[in-house]
Image 1 (cartoon, rainbow, N blue to C red):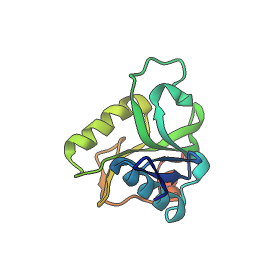
Image 2: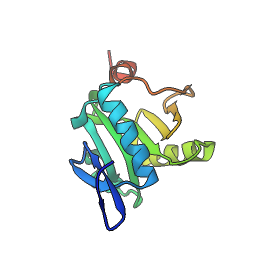
Image 3: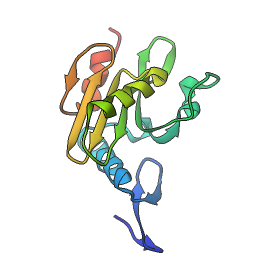
Image 4: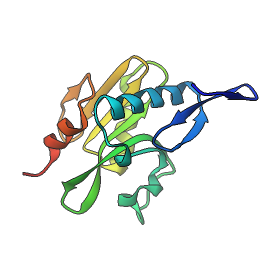
Length: 152
C-alpha cells in the first residue's frame, strides 16, 4: 500500500500505471492482478482494469449498459472475428463469494462475451466456463485458459 493524502490510502496499479485509492474492493483487485501477472503469467498488456463496457474495443458501436468491469483479460487469435477477444472477466468482491456475485458477473458477460467468468475475493476465487457448466475453485494460468479455447 502506498502513501496517504488527506487520510486516503493509495495503492499502485501496475496495469493502469498509476496510484488509485485503496478501497477494500481495490485491494482485492490489486491482490488478484499481482497474482495473475507474477504467478500465473497473464500478460500485463492484455489486461484491462475498471473499464466501461462501452470502452471495450470489441463492443464499439454496440448498445451496452453503463457498467464497469473490474478485470478483463484478452487473448490473441481465440475468436474467428477478432484479433483480440475477451478470455477471462473477473468481478472483484471485498466479501464473501456468493452465487449472486457470480450471477452478476455472468450478467455482465452477456454483453462482454468472455469465455470464462470469475468472481474473486480476499480468500479465493469462483470461476465458471461460460460455454459449459464447469466450475473451478482455482484460477488457471493464462496459457491453460488459452489452450482450452484456442481453435485447433
